[in-house]
Figure 1 (cartoon, one colour):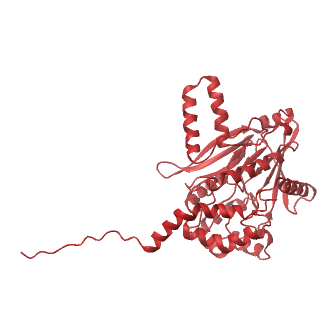
Figure 2 (cartoon, helix red, strand yellow; figure 1 turned 120 degrees about the vertical axis):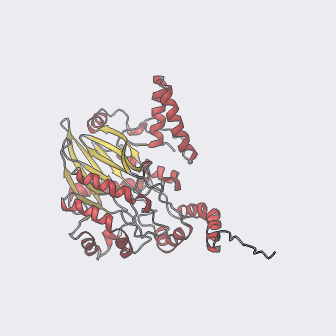
Figure 3 (cartoon, helix red, strand yellow; figure 1 turned 60 degrees about the vertical axis):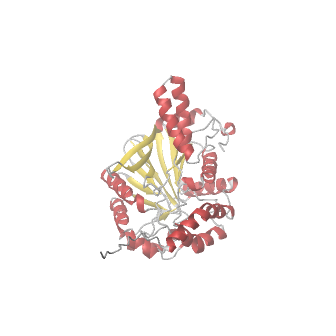
Length: 396
């Protein structure tokens, strides 16, 4: 009896994908380490000098590099977000997964009449041409423009969107994007009064004085001419805290050291992509909360905290020796985490909050308060000078 042999075709795996996967396995970690090795690490003295000079410039000549905004602690509201790294929807675009969370967050804050301070690296202009970024991010630019229409939008430049500060065509392009002129700043000072005492919040991107991104010719050449192509091909996302947690924690520590020596001042930055609240990373806060739960005999809380710490340790993070601190440093985190989450700093109703927007089980964006503190309580701590800078130990 004649019969027909049926050949079942196996799913085709292209040679190029096989090569990419092999190269990802072999070289991803090595390439990230090399990028860090051949670019300068943060230098404490350089960073401190740059922060001091910028802060003094903002005070002495407001309007030149930044603005001073007096605000009412009980009425005015601010949302501070940074490090979107908006790209062109290719494999190296770190903003793709977070875009829906970002749009949901902006819709919420605009409806609630917040002022929006964009703290830099909003556009990824080391790896992309501006024309492509504009074309693929019309929705987010339109959402930001709603704040401009209320005179409630401030745009600060970072190292990856330095173009806005140093290109002669930047002002024209900003007007084309937002339909109105947009002033670009390097820093912002929010000034208020708590219990009769002044309290200032100094906001800047945080790359100042870091040779890795503020003047190092090799790092800029490498990113502009090599790294963008490599990242796109290997689909590497270095813009998360897991990429180089040690280096980013070191930079945050340097920022903290500067802030802890100031008078009646809180420092808020972005740049490192690592959220920090009252000078503590999330992991450090978990260890402190764990100790409190043990002392209180709260076994259920202890178990929950240990599980959370275990998850972070599995990602390569480790416990820090951080015995003393002042609550003077805050970091927004970023809007390009590889799971689509975004984090930021809210100032409202007399509180400062670390918030996260994430997708719930149904894919809907939800706002979550990760930590919060009354600015009045922070001001009392600063006035009491509970822990002096000389007593602070580096947690690295």
